[in-house]
Image 1 (cartoon, rainbow, N blue to C red):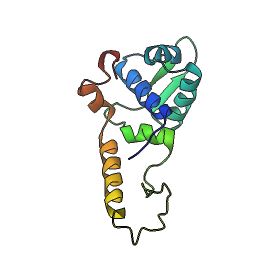
Image 2: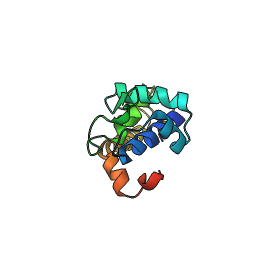
Image 3: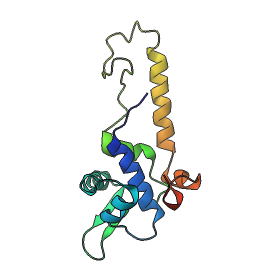
Image 4: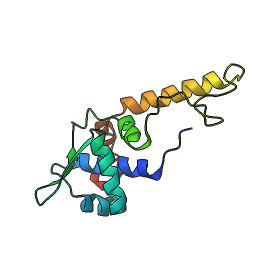
Length: 141
């Protein structure tokens, strides 16, 4: 139903990599371990920092780390830092924010509930959940 950009996938992988580490990681390290282009990752880190999910410091003693505990950061927050808000009612059939047929479309309510369900799952799924279920552990995500 939802389609997210490659950047969103990269962002999730990068944040998981940071969440696994006890010390700040340099963008170069994340880029190499996750095979994400360094220049692209730098832009993602800016978005994630602006979204309050990561902290980034320059210099020898710098690096990237989580801005909040992994138990508090949801997958939805990461996605929205990259894609923008998902909470707007979007018609999944004609890809607009205002479905011209919503009052007569018999599947409109079903799509709306499916979208709301997906958003709810993404908002309840925390980084710690992804790490606890084995994904993202030992460099695998």
